[in-house]
Amino acid sequence: MRVRVDRLDRLINLAGELVIGQQTIAQQRTRLDDLERVGQQQRRALKALDAELRRLRFSPLQRRTLDQHLAALFAADDHINSNLQGQANALQRFDTQQNQLLKDLEQEVMAARLLPIATLFSALPRAVRDLTHSTGKEVSLVVQGETTELDRKVLELISDPLLHLLRNAVDHGIELPAERLACGKSAVGRIELRAEASGGEVRVTIEDDGRGLDPQQLRHTAVQRGLLSIDQAALLDDSQAIDLIFAPGFSTAALVTDISGRGVGMDVVRNNILELGGQVQIESQPGQGTRVTMLLPLTLVTTRVLLVRAGDATLALSSSGCRGTIWIYRDLLRTLEGQTVIDYNGQTIAVFNLAEVLGLASNPPFARATRVCAVLVGHTRSPIALIVDALIDERETVVKALGPIFQQHRLLNGAIQLGDGDLVLLLNPHQLAREAGTSIQHHAASYTAPRRQTHLLVADDSFTTRELIKSIFAIGRIHYYSRH
Image 1 (tube, one colour):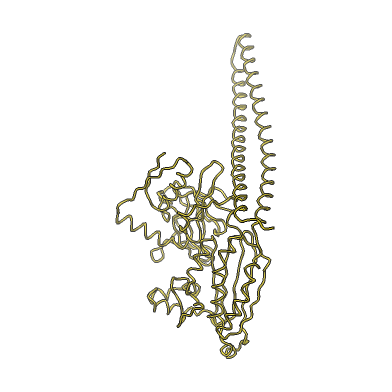
Image 2: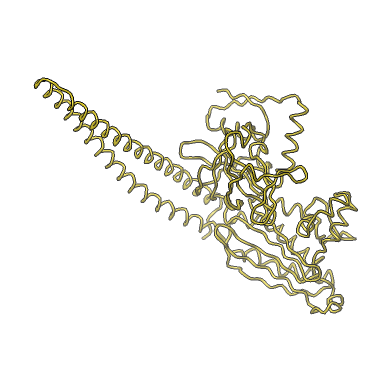
């Protein structure tokens, strides 16, 4: 018996509300711990007061009165501390039990949402056969990892990108039999399609043994199409040159067919995967083949997030898109072609201020300290460092959709609710890495060329809704007024 996806979504959302309630309980437990510490301080203060009073001389009647009052204070203190400790222990036990129950509930509901990727892979061998008949090529498709499970919505959203990548591999990756034989290859081309789960991600790889991509040809094409100057193209290393195929409209094909074009539509493939909170990586060797890897979230409903503060805003980054956190020391910064960079683990990494990228008001990063914390995001081969004002926490949370008005905002993957009721925007780290450079340039231009500000009145009877819209507009660089 199949369960409707919308009902599973509602179950997940209800479980998410329970998770938020659990976070509230954890905050209450923290407050109880704080009260326990205050009680201990009070006990020490009472003992110090008792010791000081005993050094003073009083009449017998005064001494008895003081002793009675002190005894009452010590008794009240014992009662308060005993009750606090008992409540803290009981809440700790309840919190532990509820956490385990919630984990079990989430796992069961999530398991009901997952489907094996075989439901998507099953239609691909026929597509390859049709393509080989159309192109006159011979191709052997090897499929592995069909039992790997993914969220139903993720499967739906990657169906077209996966088919596009497969068509590219057949049409422009695999050579004609005669050409392959001339190169010392088998007449039958080989395409491997693999899927494997790793933590909270699923890795889907399409690898062919075809002609591959020539970085020098890609540079030449970029110059011909006016995307880069000759000097700019010469500065690209091979991996950066290969990434040119993700530029809108970029293609090395002499003739664009109705089947595919390696590069034609690849920008759409990357954008679709980025909107899922995933990323696309491509590796190629001329004459040996091409490997395209899609890193996909296991589910779109729950995710592990890193909470950070940028300026006055608390924001969340999907942990799967973060490569780590580092300290950046002011003395180690340098400038390369006008961009601030640091050297880290043998790489030269561009450094940006997250608040500036998002257009949020903030103080200069090194105004009060010689080092600041930063989050590494983006591609493994070329990450960037985003300076944040503080690293707050990392937690598992339920992602709330922003609705149709903001669904085209690629920088946002949704919103999450904290235990105290605050709503926090969830940013897409991969899209953030792509837009960082252009965002910085945009802000620099806006400072030197002031323009008329747009004002928008937000009216809603829900405080949390107003705060969420306020956060979205702040990132959208819109000045607002909020009113009941």
